[in-house]
Image 1 (cartoon, rainbow, N blue to C red):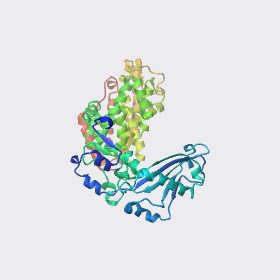
Image 2 (tube, helix red, strand yellow):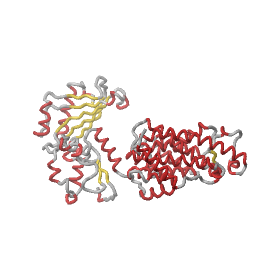
Image 3 (cartoon, rainbow, N blue to C red):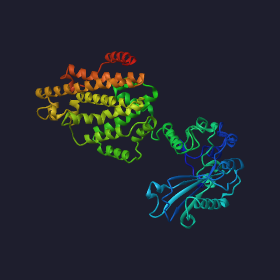
Image 4 (cartoon, rainbow, N blue to C red):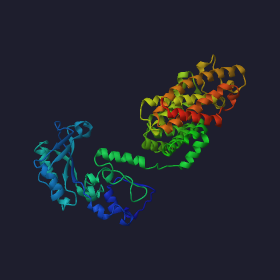
Length: 505
C-alpha cells in the first residue's frame, strides 16, 4: 500500500476490474488460469469521456435521458475498436437529473453529465492534451443542438478520461466496462465472482458475472452477498450444539434437513434464542440496542447473522422487527387482557419465525405464509400452556384475563389453591383447542414444502401438538412438571409423517 503500509485480511472483495487486479496486483506465479498472456489476449470495452458541468440557466425542454447520434455513428465503432482514433463526429448520451428531481440543480440553474464513447488506452492518445480538446468538441456539439448558449453559461466543469478510469477507477487500459461483452466473455465466461486462483478472493462489478451495466453490477453485488460468509461468524458446530441442547423437539426433526438448510436453521435459532434470552433475563438495554442497530442499518454482532441469512436465503426484514418489538413489550409487564392480544403476541414471537423459515425451506408461494404463521402461533400457544407455572414464577401471565371471572395473580398460579388450578386448567384447555385449530390449518400448508422439509415440519408440528395432548391427560401433574413427548411416540409420529408427506393431498 501507499507509504509501505501492509494490511492483512482473511477475505478480500474487490470492486475493481478483475483484469487489472490479476495483472497488476497478483504475481503471475500465483495464477494458473488468468495468466498475463491470456489477459492480454482478451478483448476490452471502449473507453469513456465523461464531462460533468453546471449552468447558470435552466434547460427545461431537455429530458432526463437524451441520446444524440452523430451523422457517422455507424463508422464510430470502427474508429474506436479498429482504427483506435478519436472521431470528429461523436455520439453522445446526455443526462439531466433535474428533469425529474429539481433538487439536483440550484434554482434557475441546471446540472448535466455527458458521456462520449472513445478508444481505450490501447490507442496511442495523449489524454492530457486531448481531454480539453474533446471537451470543447462536445460543448460545441451540444450548443448547436440541445443546449443553446451553453458556452456562455457554464459555471462548473469537470471531465474524466480513460486516464482516470485506469488511475482512479482501476480498470485495465482505462476501459469503461472491463472486458467487452462478446459471447466468449459473457455470463459464465466472464471473470467469476469467486476467484478461481486464490482462496477467499471475490469480485463484483462490471467485469464479473453476470456483466456490465447498472443491473449487472448490482446483481454481481447480490451474488457476493450470497457467496461471502458473515464477517462475524461463529463456528457452525457450536451453533448446532446450541440448537440440539436447547431444542429437543426440533433438533430431532432437523436431522432430516439438507445440510445447507440445517445450517441456516441453526444460525436462525442462535439469533432468536439470544434475543429470547435477553428478554427472559430482563436485558432491555441489549434489546433496545439491537432494535436501534436494526432500524438504522448499523453493524451488530448478532444481527449480522440475520443479514447474512437475508443475503443467502432472501429473508424479509419485517418478521425480525416484529419479533424484537414483541420482546421489548415483554420488558414492561406480561399480562394479557384478551385472546386477541395473546394471538398478536404469539405472532410476534413465534409466527414471525415461521415466516423467517419459509424462504430457507424454499417456499415461494405467498399463500403458504399464512399457514407458516398459524403453525408458529399454535406452537407458542402450546408453549404457554406447558410453562404456566414457570412463567408465573418469573412474574409473567400469558393466560388471557378474559378467560377468568376475576383476574389471577402469579400467587394464584403457583399455589395449590384448587379453584385457581381449576380455572387455570379450563383456560389451558381453551388455548390448546385454539392451538389444535391452528395446527390443522397449518397442516394444509405443509404440502407447499419440498418433500424432505415437508417431513421435518410435519413431524415437528405433530410432536408439538402432542405436548398439548399430554397436558390434557394429566393437567394437575403437568402444571408444575414439564410435559414431554417420549421417544417411542416420536418415532411413531415420524413414520406417520413420512407416509403422509409422501402422499400429498
